[in-house]
Image 1 (tube, rainbow, N blue to C red):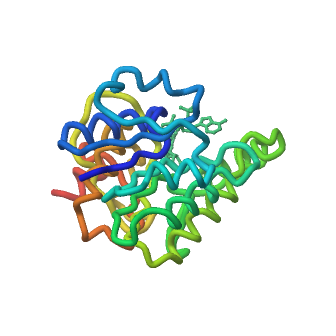
Image 2: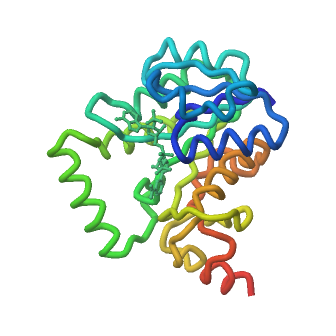
Length: 226
Ligand SMILES: NC(=O)c1ccc[n+]([C@@H]2O[C@H](COP(=O)([O-])OP(=O)(O)OC[C@H]3O[C@@H](n4cnc5c(N)ncnc54)[C@H](OP(=O)(O)O)[C@@H]3O)[C@@H](O)[C@H]2O)c1
């Protein structure tokens, strides 16, 4: 497959580049001009399109001819970074391309997710402070996902739990709703979040799903398996 990775220079993005190359995919990476050097380890093996990910011309050029697009949705700044990025991908990717987007558990598709009070307070307080400082616009990530859910493209929105670094533990398990017992441990290795994103490109069962993921080695996943 020819795969575009939007947000390739970030932590999640670089893991996705590695997994995609490991699977033999041809990779086109998009990242901000100032971050191109963060992709030095891959520079002989991937094509890099520098530029802001919410720049429609940048996205149009990067996704041309791609069979799949992996997009790191981040709500940075107050300039519709998430929704602008998502809209560019929805508009310019090939109609039959597999589109896989990342976000956190706070995104809900059908309102059936059940959140703990601690989780809701954290999202509320962090979101409020970040908006006050004009650092992050969580509402815009919500808007980005609303547009994805409404689109008739072949999308998947992968909702990550809390993340940690460390060696891969294998492909995470998933469930449709936060609050499902299998997800209770709320922890995934970042390298495996990336693995799930890349594997989703070739898993049509995930088309039009918003899987909430958790490590397959976490206590809640093990308890569920047994
Ligand atoms: N962190 C968590 O605990 C957590 C939990 C659940 C889900 N998630 C989801 O995981 C994904 C990535 O999370 P991550 O923590 O692993 O982050 P990450 O991989 O470091 O990705 C951050 C991305 O944001 C870009 N970025 C950083 N500052 C920016 C700015 N001021 N303006 C524009 N772009 C900027 C980075 O690009 P540069 O390389 O150019 O800086 C990079 O592409 C997101 O979709 C997030 O919602 C995260």
